[in-house]
Image 1 (tube, rainbow, N blue to C red):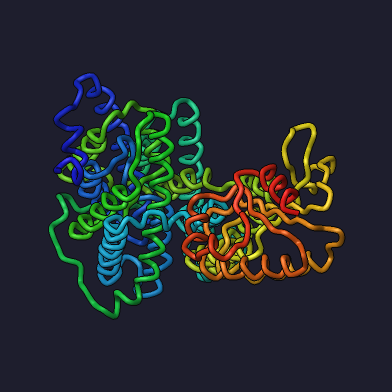
Image 2 (cartoon, rainbow, N blue to C red; image 1 turned 180 degrees about the vertical axis):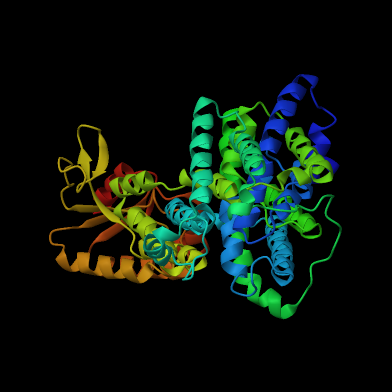
Length: 556
């Protein structure tokens, strides 16, 4: 029973000594990667850098005990950080006590939403956010994240809006205001991180750059020349505190909390499933929701901010040899030791270096190749990508993702409301019945129309079905038989069932016999419950198109 609710109760007692070296190595590498990353992402979220370290302790431990992924690295990520800043900054000034208090409440709400979704087995909800939406949103958000770091990279504060386009215009207009030393530090940091990563993905490039630039700024006293530095980073572990609850604030933050809960879970589950597929073990989405939710709830009581599974860190964790969640526990312990004994080392860390870490991290999230790929496969998916991307850049983070989801749902509704009806003919090449629009060589059967319905039937598409068959009946001449191929019909509701009865009655009134072939058992049960066996004068349900043809010809 304990193993069912606490996955660690299964892997900890059965831990293999052979896995220890890989877990130790991965835990250490991820920790030294997470320290500068966590500080950078906290800054991106409008929080003090130390909050990124807090978010890399308790949440990591909780997820390691409750998660079903063995290699997923949970902690601060760029996407969630940007969403936090975009949403909470409209209520309070970033960096203030009020802002931090709101972020803690937001983290608690996100955790509760994810936990409730997991307990209610609602993990499937994220399936309604298509890949095109996520890719378009991620690409636009990556650009927004990058542009948001221009003030730290160029060393001046932007006077205008946070809008990407306005910031780009202001950057060009104020090119003379660039603080050259800050820009030099940022540019060199970007080049060093890229070069070191090319040498080996296991090299902790961000940490090496952080150490080099701290020494560089400290030795030359560059902080006296206008280079912005992190300054004092509080030492010690975060104290326990309860987020301030307010029904008014909960209502204000709820849309943002739902958005981050879903986006964070999608980012996490996508990476977890990818690694699990390679290692041939299963991920349980609802347990992942419970683990992430509990990690966020726990972190909200220890001055953290919202976390989820990260792509780059999880990849490094896996490539570095992690075999079990012990690697994440080791990472958390190293960060705790850093908070206790080494925070003063970060005093001279330039903000331009943290901006460089963020810029390099989000660059790979911009994926115009995916847009081209989607357009080549499906113009509709490509249009959804472009709609989400453009909406996010122009309207904003939350509005962009909502626009993308709305576009996906609209397309889903339209597609299901207008199902594809394929007229079939017999193909001698394949000895099977094929769509005559796809295979022009397929021959129609004399006096017979064979229609394959490629969708489940329900109230939304029943009127369309009636309209199409009524129009078809008016156009038919010398046709005595209609066979409906139901191989693509997985479900039928009462409204569609009634429409189907009316369609068949109309055809039979015009002396056209109707039969159904390849009906699935779930659909057959619905017809039996509607007493079709008693209503129909002759057999209507056949195992194949050939059987239906033979029966109809015999009866006529």
